[in-house]
Image (cartoon, rainbow, N blue to C red; front, top):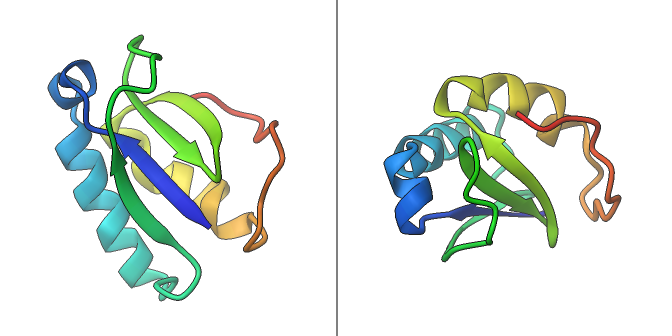
Length: 92
């Protein structure tokens, strides 16, 4: 699965660097290096309330740095390797 984190100027201000670092750590903690590829992306066009994240081309907008662990545990850990669903059930 591919996780893309927006690093555009608006997301940068909202904590994109912190989100990337937390996601990197969580991938290691849960030993998901073979399942998860973490990438940076320029603006995804959802410059609302937090950092935009795309999972296999499906966007989840406005995750905040403090919600990374819950997002990872509740969403990422439970997705199949080839997750393609458009509905992950949350916007954080």
